Length: 60
Image 1 (cartoon, rainbow, N blue to C red):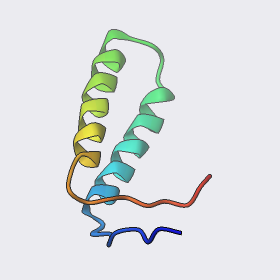
Image 2: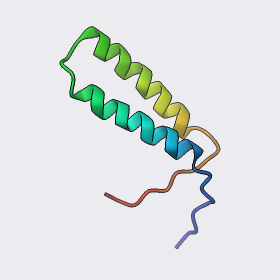
Image 3: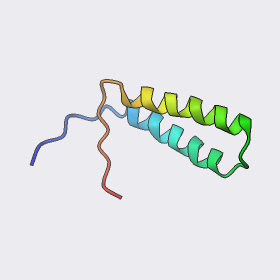
């Protein structure tokens, strides 16, 4: 089994924060502002995961 690379924590922490914002956003009624915020959060999430840090999480 491959050994995961060291985890720095920075990218995962930020991605976790963004995931929480997305969950909260999805509880809001559909609107133009929600759609715009959704797009911004997806960009932030992608940026958090494109860093040199690797996130390893247990399977759900």
